[in-house]
Amino acid sequence: MDEAAGFCLRKQDVISCMFSSWYRKLKHLTMESVIIPLPPEFIHYLNSDGIVLPSGHFETKGKREETEDDSWDSSSDGETTHNTVWEQPQFAALHKKIQQTIDYLGGIVFPKLNWSSPLDAKWISSNGTLQCCRPSDIYLLLKSSNRVAHDLSKAFRSCTDYDQCDEPPGGFQLVLRQWVDIIPGMEFRCFVKDSMLIAVCQRDYTTFYNHLVLHQDELMIEIEEYYRRHILSKFSLRHYVFDIYRNYRNSYMLIDFNPFSSITEPLLFTWEELTDILTPESTDPQHPMFRFLTSDAGIQPNKDAYSRLPIDVVDLSTGEDIAKFIDLFKKETWQQDDNSDDEASEQAATLQ
Ligand SMILES: Nc1ncnc2c1ncn2[C@@H]1O[C@H](COP(=O)(O)OP(=O)(O)O)[C@@H](O)[C@H]1O
Ligand SMILES: [Mg+2]
Image (tube, rainbow, N blue to C red; front, side, top):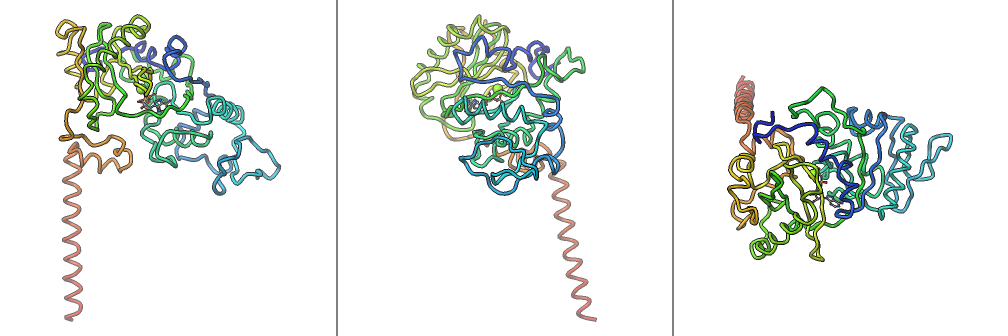
């Protein structure tokens, strides 16, 4: 039971939000994407410890040139004519398919698995974004991400009908999406309950955007219109969450679907509000609640920063784990005591 949300999350809800479940039908609303089935060896590679493959499989000798192509070179000593040596014969077909897809999608792609992108790992990429120009960029991000690991082993764990099977129907897939430069202040998360749009929130909820204050009414009219025209009756669930982006041409682009459940971030709402307080009867269905920051006071820390710090530090900063704080405090105190003992014995030694 998904207690925080007060809603039962079923496997089918999670499956309906999987990228391949909705993309074909709603392709015209979103950026062009390609779904690549992942072979078991690659899943094994993602699940194995360490960021790089064991030596002999994945070996980097120096920096790669931007202009090189990523084709395999099977010269006898394993050296390629490039600066980088790649020896992953078991993924050769997949590697080639990924390279071809990157080329097809214009040279820069956004990667994700069946549900999640490696957002938590973007700090590890060379430019701190999820932009990928080469297969190796994708491998590094996927290997470094806890969100991706969750897709691989825990996607159905919170479902009431979880049956010990963690593999999605159709298997694990890599989704490569054409890269779009998204302006964070123009992305919105929309909550649908009983097929009614009950709430909308700025997607980047850690920043104050004055344009949201100024244009809130127009934005809500546009988003409701978009929902009625393009999403309502096209998506298979009655309760769900979707993200959209308003681009510079003032048109909207669908980004993703998520379950109406506490496994999805409620951003500036809480799941209690979304499930109990905001009902289609209690809110005017013509006017879903729009929540955005109204000033830059009380801005929340950016969640991206969490994945750049050791988890202990994050727990301390959020006050989530007071026991850790006490341990750390004790350790500091003992260390100081130890140091003063050392100083005392040093002084004693010099006096002798
Ligand atoms: N094709 C893309 N190009 C650039 N940024 C993207 C693209 N697709 C998504 N994003 C950004 O990444 C965020 C997460 O994408 P999403 O597909 O929803 O992954 P997740 O389900 O893991 O959150 C989006 O909210 C959006 O800001
Ligand atoms: Mg998503």
